[in-house]
Length: 332
Image 1: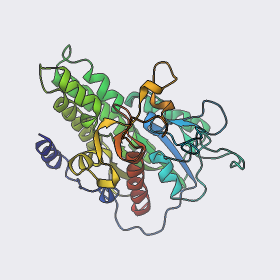
Image 2 (image 1 turned 120 degrees about the horizontal axis):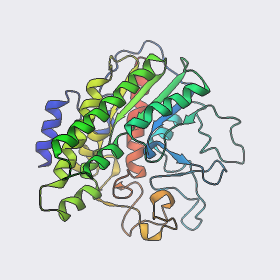
Image 3 (image 1 turned 45 degrees about the vertical axis):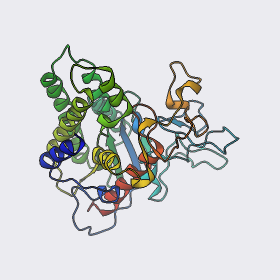
Image 4 (image 1 turned 60 degrees about the vertical axis):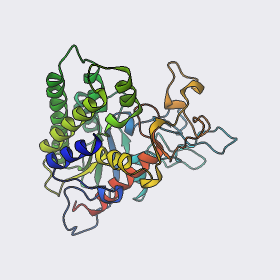
């Protein structure tokens, strides 16, 4: 089944690659004339790109596996186990987010921004961009990231079978096209854009559990198909001329790791790393998952998934490396 789906992807999306190292150069690009060195990074999307500074101390938490000071010291270290946007920011000089800017010598008034919000959908992207534009216009030194749509896919899937798969598919295609339009809007406004397809949550623990829990149809394969259509719609809508927009493919990253366990050091592709039974939040959440609260035998870097639908820190880092490659190679 997996090979058939991946063959469909390659036929439908003509710009596919196999390894995480190549994903960063998968689409767009050309010969770079001058080296682009961003002065500000602005992240749009959902919780995959969000850091929540709940305590207001510049040491925020993530919807992934959070790092701690040591195996015995549970103090959060937001610079550790970086999100993909942090990995991207680290590839350039001076790009710091206020949500991860702890003492003792924090950067004064960081200019980079995280506009991504927990639970965001494609329809929320326009408002995030509006909020940024209300603060300041985009300049030639602005690099922005966009990753949103998993919540659209999962919410639409939850409507089945009340809504038919063709209707669900049409809805996610509309959502993917909306993300594409907003990406084009960002580029038209002067930003340099790195946009990612959504991770293929059809291979997530959630999708695997859905397949086991239902006999009406193969629910996992259905989710894979829905993700495929969202991403295809996104990709067909963006003006991917290789100049203003750089594309990275989180879906193909996930599929490659599932097909070849061990890629990017990730060996467990089917189970969640976080033990939500140790969460102190209500409801339980990976927001307080750390390297000290993992399921026995799991790892922040060796598992593909942090919980049943969010990427682990290992997968986040692999996606960040792809984004950094794309940003450095794209002729911005």
